[in-house]
Length: 211
Image 1 (cartoon, helix red, strand yellow):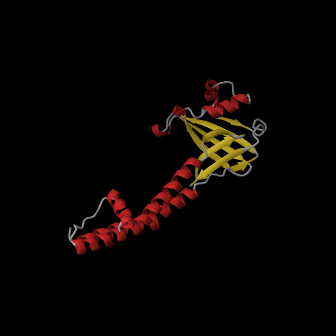
Image 2: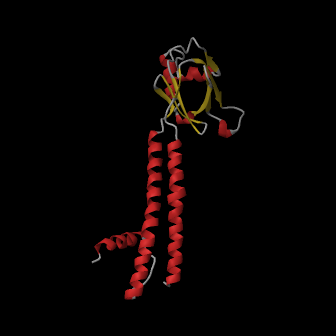
Image 3: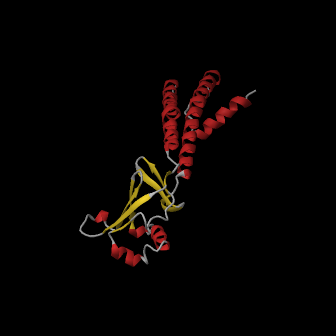
């Protein structure tokens, strides 16, 4: 490879490394940090309205159990997709409080509402929203929907750090590697080429082992 082409390739890789170090990595890192993991807590539930969508509507909206939970501060709306069977946790809570007898009777009675007196057993309602999407809901510490996204947040933050470090490593290693390749070419006539990542790492450590 000619020296001019080698320099152009090196500059291109340095540009990519700069994008990772200054834009890609930090953007992912900030996105991870922005993920909310602290529940908003409500101590009073005024009403829960449940409605089952299954007939005379668009096929994509069928088999959906719609819930509106009216608290003293806001209305929490979400859906269960019945084939996923994730609604069974909620039904278990309602059954434990003798608000329903069984699943069949529950669906036959829809739409249905539970009032403040019937819901007096609810001491805490916890919700987490991320970008206006409900990702977690719990009644009296029992998860009803989703989960607290601690793992997701941790993974994204680690990925952001990794990409940022990768970018900064490229900004450090690429110019150093290019310098020593050009120097070896001028002094010893060695071939100039763009090394793969493994060779680049090896060349970097050779800097510290040269006598």
